[in-house]
Image (tube, rainbow, N blue to C red; front, side, top):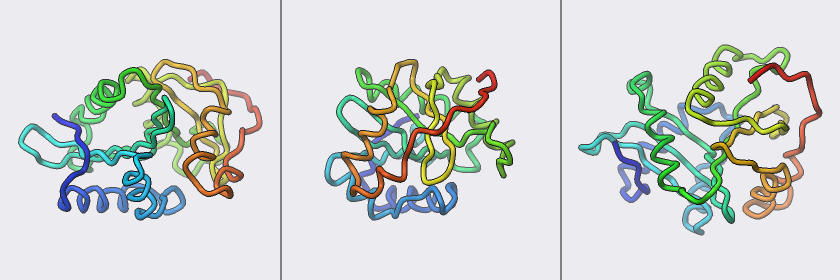
Length: 186
């Protein structure tokens, strides 16, 4: 398996199609914004492929100082359950060695969460793959999110600085520290 920068129009189209189908509209940035961030050197759009170049999934990362936010990560539906996700996390760790890797997931413990089973499955996947929850949650455009890292500490101000640095001023104001809640063992 390999993880490489999107360098071909065909890869970009495969990534775009999976991106559009894998994430809810409320969580998607305009694809043009992702392309702009990548062109500016503030992001990387990575294609996950098997050893002969068959597309398996996508990883879209935001880069700021020593932080790497795995902003979007999806494996093609027909490739799920085959270890692609865990192998990709290992490839991301190698690619970004020396940097702090983090990601956001919807809080599965949020009361009334509409897709709780999916959220629990997602959190279990990341915990199995050695990601560690931070002691804070954020409200990201009104959705409570857990912040997970690759066994490093990323303080809330550092996390928030990513948005202040890479996006227009109004965006950062829509991302806040979530109020404390009773946290189940994660």
